[in-house]
Structures are given as C-alpha cells and as structure tokens.
Length: 222
Image 1 (cartoon, rainbow, N blue to C red):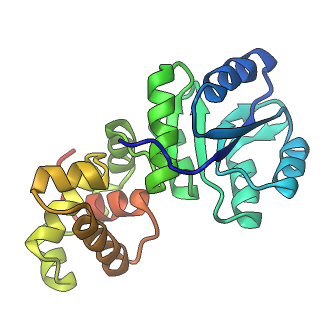
Image 2 (tube, rainbow, N blue to C red):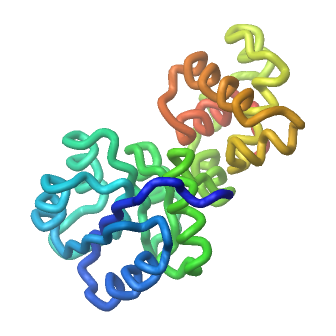
C-alpha cells in the first residue's frame, strides 16, 4: 500500500513512558509523520486534541484509573472523526468485539511487530480502517448463532448483487479496497462504490458492522 500523501499527526495514550518512547521512535522515522504527541492520562490527551485533533490515536486498552472502552466512547462522542487504533495485551474476542463496535478503526496486540503497526497506521490513514482476519473472526464468533438468518433470505430481501456479495465476503476476510480490486479484477473506485452501497443496504457505519451483519445472516463460515 502507498504511504499517506499528507503530513500526519499521531497521538499516543499509554501510561508506560518506555512504551510511548519506543512508539515515538518508530513513528518519527516515518516520512509522512509530521507530529507525535504523547499522553499518559485522558486529561493530557484532551489537551492535545484541543490544540490539534490527531489523525490517528494509538490507545492502550487498559490503564490505571481509566477504562479503555469508556475512554473511547468519550473521545468519539466529542470527536467522532477521531481514528483510534487499540493496542492491547488482551486478545480475547470480547475485547476486540467491544472496541470495534464502539468505533475503533483497528485492534492490534501490544507485541505486534513494528511493520504490523506501521501497516495498520498507513491503512487507517488512507482507507479509514485496518481490518485483520483476527478481528473478523472475533466479530463473527461474537454473533449469537440463534439470531442468524439464511443467506438466501438476506440476498433476496436486500437485493445484493453477486458482485456486492463477493465484495462483502472479501471485506469480512480483512482485505483492503485495493486488494479486493486486484482479487476481482476491477478498479479500486468500483470497489469503493460497492462498499458504500453495502453500508447503505445493511444500515451499518463501518467494517465491523458489515462483518457482524454478514455473520448474523449466515453469509460467512466460522
């Protein structure tokens, strides 16, 4: 994927100074990163956001005296366009599902490699999300089986075209618009058009919503 073509401002919210310093070292080496701000507490981060809203926030899920989901809810209520990437030692489905449904743009383990982190940041900056197979599986397993509807009924009632169904399945596998375009031999712009229509037809707002919708309606195999 091409690097972002605009100068990016990234903020870090984590209570461990050494971890923040390590992230700063990685981020400042990226040619498109113009500014990196650190915060150890929510008030410190809010001060950063008041000065200049970050393009991406790297958010630690668990910190003393702060609850990650509550922090995310508060931030997104005040700054709905804030792109949050969660960094966490917790890999259980419930944590991933909760944060993605709240509006996080990606969820990475804290032991992710620098290359994985950079790839996530670049995808969030350029496409708005970084969706991995691990996130997809967590969301799909979080869907209650009894609520599923037959796929045939879904397709008939919502008038999905075969191409839209193919795009939806590939979205749920964690592919980006560019990767889907290459897979289906169509243009990235065409994929983006299908993507937008899928959001409209399913009444969802983001990729997490699409995955949950598809899983609920029996379109995907666990």
